[in-house]
Image 1 (cartoon, rainbow, N blue to C red):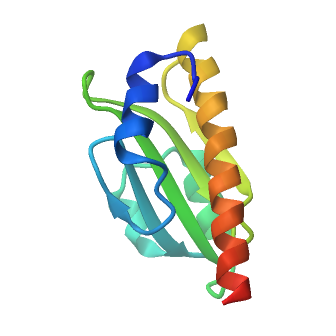
Image 2 (tube, helix red, strand yellow; image 1 turned 90 degrees about the vertical axis):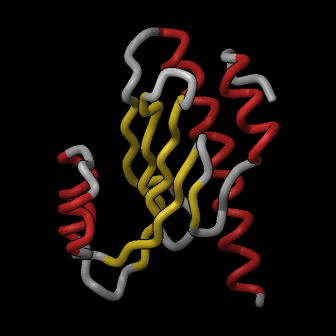
Length: 123
């Protein structure tokens, strides 16, 4: 793994990329439906809330949040559609090295989610 941040590389090496709902120290994946009211308690960025609230209730989404446990901070959040595509992203850390790492993580997450969604369709 080469995101540009050893900490993030180590977290991916230790925990992998989550494709099923759950949580560990570096990431959380939550399944949501369009208009899901649970988002009111999740303290999400406005753009992600708007995307979720604007979709019909039959649409399934995944919210993939990444954390930096050593800093007790959020790294990024990705809203993923049924096909595994990222439809909205937020990078919480603004400096260049963290933004570069977020872009790498985004690529890795999208590939993993697309592969998982293809397996779900095939099953």
